[in-house]
Image (cartoon, rainbow, N blue to C red; front, side, top):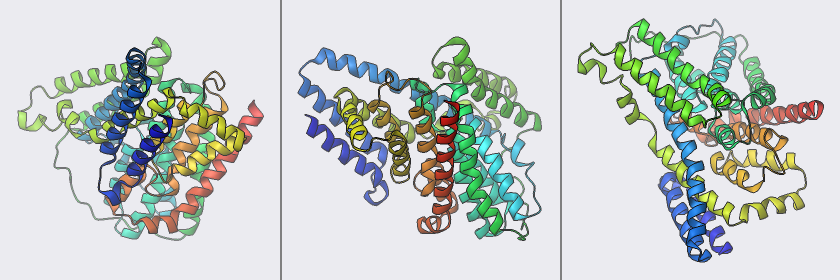
Length: 427
């Protein structure tokens, strides 16, 4: 059984990593892998009642993450449909390109912590397309945005899906993950941005010509401000909701989404259907990335099989005996996440290591959040933020590797060293 499970998982993982050349969506590969793994496990165990109990437990854990992601993605889509992000982007101005790097990087860093790194990347890259006239400048800013978005998402419970998984799973809690990882994440951003801005010294800011209203939507200033503030409040209040009620985070985001839904319907209740159909939450639900949601379901259920079969625990024991150093193991996981998706990497790590040996907010889980969240910046395909920027600006893989891979790696290593030193001093 063990050999068959490993072979199927490796094949599914390979199909996920080679999504582009194979032309097979990674969501399909993940679902096939999950279905085959649970089938092999169920037939080999010969104890249907035990397998049903384990599957139900895994399904509950998976559903909590999926419901949270659906709620959060819908809130963001509602804000975007009201052009709510213009509340921030309309205030971004700079005289030199070097100063613009720091403005874009800083806004991206903190915005991705409040939204998520994928959404923030899409918003900020789209903004740069409106503000910058030269393509080489836009490509440069896209690289800056990818690094800043991944660094900003790593220290927030809602900023990166891997940190969210650790938060919902109980491996990290709100205040410790913020205070423990924000400084290393800042270093991760500051090091490469310092090098980029130094290389741009003296370069003037070449602004693009105004294009009017490219979205074609008409929303009032009141509607933009209201939906932006309420959407942001719905997202930011989730950690507070969890701390006060001790309920799972998905309940908090669903409550916030419900309030946002009711307010949106009231604001647009007197408009003709043709005007309000584009800004309703019902329409926002059709625009969320369901393919990504299905991928999470498949990969989390697939990894759960390896956990129940004891394979991940055996792998953790082997790594401890062979490598020995936990910091080296976690940094290696972060580096590998630049090549393959960081979601299954973190899902596997959560099954590999027991919370009895590594309690919440311990070195392993906080460092895992940092490494898995920021390691993907080293290659353009290593994170959802990078893939989004690649699609919007048609960034070449080799171009990014030549221009930004070493920069991202330097920030990754610098931030990791800062976290290790910080942890040693405080513990």
